[in-house]
Amino acid sequence: MKFRVVFPANIELEEAIKYYDHQLPGLGFRFFQEVAAAIERIELMPEAWTKIGKHTRRSLLKGFPYALFYVIETEEILITAVAHLHRDPKHYRDRII
Image (cartoon, rainbow, N blue to C red):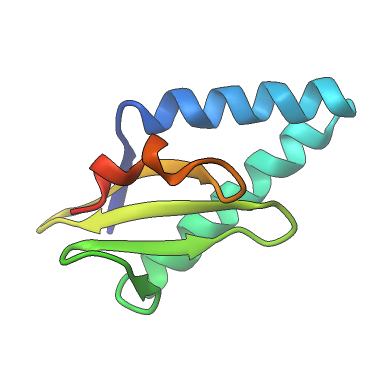
Protein backbone atom coordinates (compact mmCIF):
# COMPACT_ATOMS: atom_id res chain seq x y z
CA MET A 1 0.00 0.00 0.00
CA LYS A 2 1.31 3.46 -0.86
CA PHE A 3 1.67 6.24 1.67
CA ARG A 4 1.67 10.03 1.52
CA VAL A 5 2.74 12.58 4.12
CA VAL A 6 0.23 15.43 3.90
CA PHE A 7 0.45 19.07 4.99
CA PRO A 8 1.26 20.04 7.75
CA ALA A 9 2.76 16.65 8.70
CA ASN A 10 5.48 17.13 6.08
CA ILE A 11 6.48 20.42 7.75
CA GLU A 12 6.50 18.74 11.18
CA LEU A 13 8.76 16.01 9.82
CA GLU A 14 11.20 18.51 8.30
CA GLU A 15 11.30 20.59 11.50
CA ALA A 16 11.94 17.55 13.68
CA ILE A 17 14.78 16.37 11.43
CA LYS A 18 16.37 19.84 11.55
CA TYR A 19 15.94 20.04 15.33
CA TYR A 20 17.57 16.66 15.98
CA ASP A 21 20.37 17.33 13.51
CA HIS A 22 21.07 20.62 15.29
CA GLN A 23 21.21 18.79 18.64
CA LEU A 24 23.68 16.20 17.37
CA PRO A 25 24.92 15.82 13.78
CA GLY A 26 23.44 12.66 12.31
CA LEU A 27 20.60 12.41 14.84
CA GLY A 28 18.19 13.97 12.34
CA PHE A 29 19.02 11.16 9.92
CA ARG A 30 18.44 8.57 12.65
CA PHE A 31 15.06 10.18 13.34
CA PHE A 32 14.22 10.01 9.63
CA GLN A 33 15.26 6.33 9.53
CA GLU A 34 12.91 5.57 12.43
CA VAL A 35 10.05 7.40 10.69
CA ALA A 36 10.75 5.32 7.55
CA ALA A 37 10.79 2.12 9.63
CA ALA A 38 7.49 3.07 11.28
CA ILE A 39 5.94 3.72 7.87
CA GLU A 40 7.12 0.29 6.69
CA ARG A 41 5.49 -1.31 9.75
CA ILE A 42 2.27 0.61 9.04
CA GLU A 43 2.32 -0.48 5.38
CA LEU A 44 2.72 -4.13 6.39
CA MET A 45 -0.03 -4.06 9.01
CA PRO A 46 -2.06 -0.84 8.64
CA GLU A 47 -4.81 -1.85 11.05
CA ALA A 48 -2.49 -3.13 13.81
CA TRP A 49 -1.83 0.23 15.48
CA THR A 50 -3.84 2.03 18.12
CA LYS A 51 -7.06 3.64 16.96
CA ILE A 52 -7.39 7.15 18.44
CA GLY A 53 -10.32 8.43 16.39
CA LYS A 54 -13.00 6.98 14.18
CA HIS A 55 -10.54 6.80 11.25
CA THR A 56 -7.18 7.87 12.72
CA ARG A 57 -4.53 5.52 14.07
CA ARG A 58 -1.30 6.19 15.95
CA SER A 59 2.06 4.47 15.59
CA LEU A 60 4.72 5.32 18.17
CA LEU A 61 8.30 5.81 17.05
CA LYS A 62 11.04 3.80 18.73
CA GLY A 63 13.64 5.89 20.56
CA PHE A 64 11.95 9.27 19.98
CA PRO A 65 8.98 10.94 21.74
CA TYR A 66 6.98 11.10 18.51
CA ALA A 67 4.05 9.32 16.91
CA LEU A 68 2.76 9.13 13.38
CA PHE A 69 -0.97 9.73 13.05
CA TYR A 70 -2.46 8.24 9.91
CA VAL A 71 -5.68 7.44 8.09
CA ILE A 72 -6.20 4.40 5.87
CA GLU A 73 -7.74 5.42 2.56
CA THR A 74 -8.84 3.05 -0.19
CA GLU A 75 -5.51 3.03 -2.04
CA GLU A 76 -3.09 4.83 0.25
CA ILE A 77 -2.15 5.65 3.82
CA LEU A 78 -2.20 9.34 4.68
CA ILE A 79 0.24 10.46 7.40
CA THR A 80 -1.67 13.39 8.92
CA ALA A 81 0.66 14.32 11.79
CA VAL A 82 4.20 13.79 13.01
CA ALA A 83 3.34 14.54 16.61
CA HIS A 84 5.75 15.28 19.45
CA LEU A 85 4.12 13.52 22.40
CA HIS A 86 5.36 15.97 25.05
CA ARG A 87 3.79 19.01 23.40
CA ASP A 88 0.29 20.37 23.68
CA PRO A 89 -2.07 18.00 21.81
CA LYS A 90 -4.08 21.01 20.56
CA HIS A 91 -1.38 21.30 17.91
CA TYR A 92 -2.62 18.19 16.10
CA ARG A 93 -6.03 17.46 17.65
CA ASP A 94 -7.91 18.82 14.62
CA ARG A 95 -6.23 16.18 12.43
CA ILE A 96 -7.68 13.28 14.42
CA ILE A 97 -10.79 12.16 12.54
